[in-house]
Amino acid sequence: MKKDEREIARILERNLVPEVERREMERLERQARLQMEQMDILTWNAFPYRLMRQIPYITSWIWAVQALVVIVFAVLLRQGQGAANLLLLIMLSMGPLLALLLVVDVARSYGCNMWEMEAVCRYDLGQVTAMRMCIVGGADMAVLAACCCLYGRGRGSIWEFGLLAVFPFFVSSSLYLWELKRFSGSCSIYVLALTGAGLGLAGCPALNRAYNWMAAGRLEWAPALTLCMLGAAGAAMAYHAAGLCRHGWMKGGESGGWSLG
Amino acid sequence: MEDEKMVRRIRQGEGELLGPLIEKYYKDVFRFCYYKTGNEASAYDCTQETFLRMIRFMESYVEMHRFKSYLLRIALNVCRDYYRENSVSTVPLEEAEACGAAGGGAPGVTAAETGNGRIEEACVVQQCLMRLPEFQREVIILHFYYGYKLREIAAATGVTLSTAKSRLKQGQDKLRRIFREEGIDEKG
Image 1 (cartoon, chains in turn orange, cyan):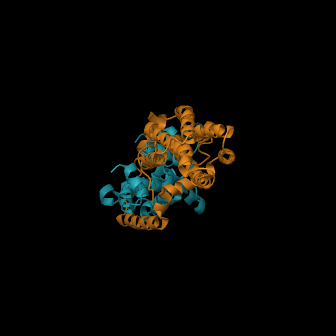
Image 2 (cartoon, one colour):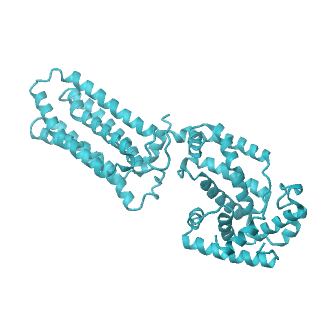
Image 3 (cartoon, chains in turn orange, green):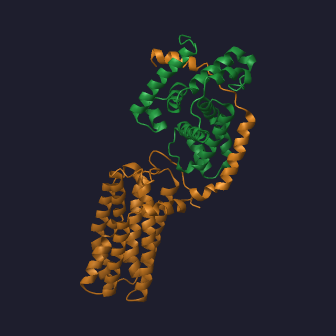
């Protein structure tokens, strides 16, 4: 502090503040408790509530691309045998990359300095990405479940669909969620993109082989195995999603768990 | 318990922790509101509103490790609203003369502890402070009573660094002039 500032500070120090009255403090405590009870604090702290509030911030082109993929997927399913199946397999194997559109969207808004304006400044990149993945993933799951039923009623068994479509979805989602949790702030779009590309490259031949085996009728044990794999992958995805929501996965700021109620 | 832990638990519904949190920061917030409003009753009202507003917007709190700054920022806005509602920005110095006698300045400070002279002096200093325009007064309070750096003042008051700097400079000049007018010895 400079000399002239010190002189002002010395005078200002003479300004005495009244002693705080205990009853005023107690009155405030009572009022604060009352207000908190009226606010139903647990509701707005709940994870589903937080997810709901993220929905308006998801750009419309994400939904448009998702819808387009679902439509193409449904058309390919209806066509059945031949070249269409190859397309279907390629598309399924590229499925993991679809989730990365969200990361691109979040990164885009971050890059355009829209971060604070989007009212999501309370969360970091990992948090926003994970929450949006949960939302879009949930919608995808609903569509996949519907497709699963249609496929089961139409041209194949439900377990076939589970193996070709739902299992890759579970595996890729749990991997992304694990990465977001494990690497937190340092989990950049490049890490996720690399994972997606790797899954896509490995997934295409694997799905192709599985499909050929099924077509050749060599997989008597496949339904039971598919069920086990789906159970394990689904449990892993749920575990990582819950871990991400509950524990200190947040970079900087808030490090507390969320109420999942 | 650390602030962030306490706030987190309150956010998860543990209302009984509000008591310790309020007790911890009540004096700081009250002190700020008193310096800002210059009136004990108004300071109590503003302090109460600050905490109630903090609870209302607790959900949006992210500045962990700086809870006090967060509270003071709310207090600043509450006091601004108070001035807006009451259409008062500065207080004429004549009130200072009645301050000590009426006990309107620092009534909670007992004469036995401090002496009447000090109470009157405190009243005069407070009234000098009240003669500053609101935007200069808040900068002076944050800088001299809370030790805020210019960057922190700029963030708390929502202005640019250069604006905060000029407000502090102008506030100091004006305060020094007021002190001289009132015969308060700067050399102590």
